[in-house]
Length: 262
Image (tube, rainbow, N blue to C red):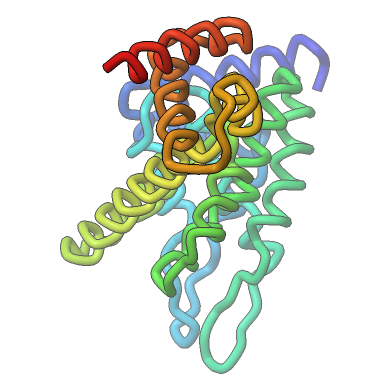
């Protein structure tokens, strides 16, 4: 495609994706043959049905997932491409169809296609990473340690909200109980992420001076007074006070004098 054709194709795809409900617009792109020109990987998701190795229509599922996300380009592109690697990774094992590592394969395909369409490199990187991480949540039902939860949040980074939205939207089952259970699991994961982040933030907090400096200034040895003083200084720092060593030392002296006189 020429540069003009690329710009036109990108705008056409973007217009379809950013419809309040993109369901019909995406199907029109597919049925008209235009999708085969803009994103040939998309109609390729219309995998032939096998009467023995049954699996859901990946194309229909993909468009349903896109339609469940909010109209933001990054997350809708990620939804559009999240299963793009399934046709190239499909195999039949033990009487069932499998798509091992389709997220990794799909991430590479996503990067190549988005670059060919002339998308901004930052957007390409973010969408590719969302596709790569899109299947990570599947192991949560087996029970994640706190370390696994932290790793999930750390790997997602600034994409955490989009990744969780993609996970929620990826559930297109008609089984209401199963759908509700997945939403509850994502709710639980988000609570755990918030709780662990708060705990780590608390542990990382330190007053502007440490216990050794407190003992030096007060002329005392290890004991409950030191812990009390450190906690007082930490409370001041959380309140936006005593943020520098000089301010902390002055506050400590004032606190100690008031405590002694009391």
